Amino acid sequence: MSGTVTPPKANIMQPEALKLNVVDNPPSVLSQLTQETLALTRRLFIQLQRRPSTLVAGIIQPVMWLFLFGALFQNAPQGLFGNSHTYGQFLSAGVIVFTAFGGALNAGLPVMFDREFGFLNRLLVAPLASRFSIVLASALFIVSQSLLQAAVIVVAAAFLGAGLPNIAGLGAIALIVFLLALGVTALSLGLAFTLPGHIELIAVIFVTNLPLLFASTALAPLSFMPQWLQVVASLNPLSYAIEPIRYLYLHQDWGLNSLVMQAPWGDITFGGAMLILLGFNVVALLSIQPLLRRSLA
Image 1 (cartoon, one colour):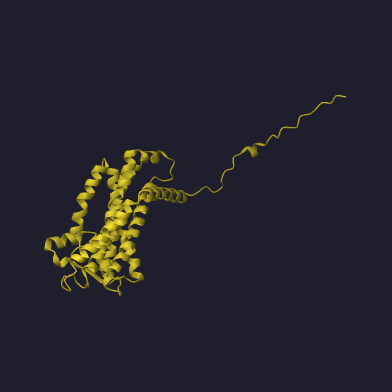
Image 2: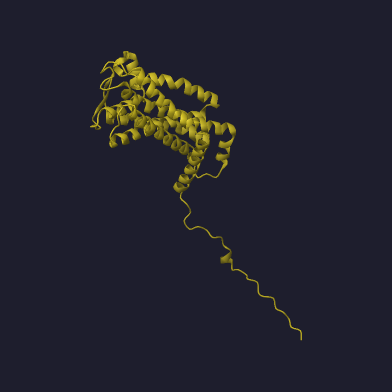
């Protein structure tokens, strides 16, 4: 007896079942920007982990400055550098600020090398939520590195006899370093997208570094300088980061109304210096906006 085998019916899916699973709530632009920024920042930290010599040198050099310059002027007359007990205590603020400044000034070099090696072009054609994540990642990396270097310098200065500000003072130092590093990083990234190559950027860094150091209050107070140099140092943003930190080392009791600097055109309070640094950041960020839009378009 032969029977006819009926094949099973094909599982024909209804048209509704063929629809793709579409996420009802796609990620917001902000969350995508955050994810991209963190991923690119992680890439920079991986590079630093593989080649830590830059960070090590950036820590050893300022500690050597503290030790050698402090020993050089240890027999200076009392009161020669204001209310500082030792020159090391006077110098600590300048070393903290100039280390953060130097690191931020070099922020454009990784971006410049990415341009020259072609990696930046790959990022620009990638489906990024915002290409500004490239800039934000560099800024976040440099600011984090500057804060780490500042923490090491503060500890080293304490061991060398400079003392240690209170908890609120340490928080204020971190805020000052953050503001300075952010503004200088913005300018360095603007140069990285403007200059033709890393040779030109390194030349700008070399030409800028030492003049801004000597034309500030990092190594000597304003009263030591000739009148024209006092004017130049009072226009230097580094001075408005150095003097508040120096005041924190010398005074445990401080406030926004505390007088930290006597510029040729008037007295500068702690709060006034912070406002000047904030204004410097605003000017730096606004000035690079056209460059970034043109380069990242």
